[in-house]
Length: 245
Image 1 (cartoon, rainbow, N blue to C red):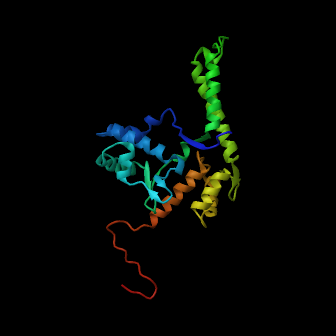
Image 2: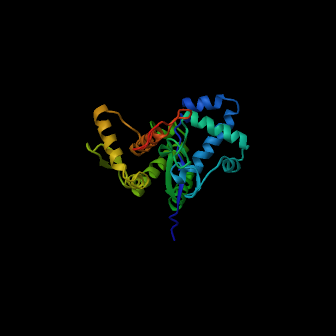
Image 3: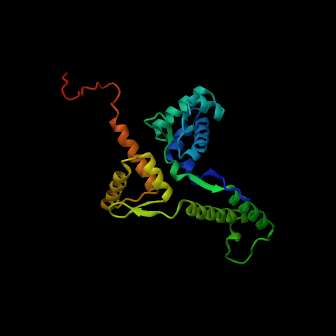
């Protein structure tokens, strides 16, 4: 019987380690350790959509992260603070830590599909390389071609699993898959329609393009929540109706 369980993998662009945040991070004292912790946290958060939690009721603490990443607790605490400063990690209102930009890095497939790809890879390895002039195999190793084909197949499977994105918003220019829309409804009850229309109007008026409309909406929602929190060191002089200072 086919094994249809899901597994998740991390997709990194070839210039990931050249980004400003990672270059600055690795230039610090113990920066290579911080970089290692960051990658492990990305992997730990994949199946939870970027949230660092053992399950839906238990968020990861610094001590738990230290144990799971096999680093000293002091190193982990310093790393988390630096991640927050660089915008690599955000703390949600619930206290959960969230890996920013994770939506652009999550890959998903099934063990059955992976077995089929592994079999094709093995069979292709037994074939002689193409030698006709102008073929990609003349300038790139065969395994690179195979990897490219596998990536295309994975993307096709992901589209089948999540559904092709549909257009939403006032100007029909916000594209979300069925899975993304369902998650927005669950995590932003009563607000998801507002954020979709807000993004739709913003795109229509500014002409800006976004890699992920769902990730942009989550980011805006987090920023709006952060603005509601009183700043540290500034007394709150607000009072309810009928009260006075």
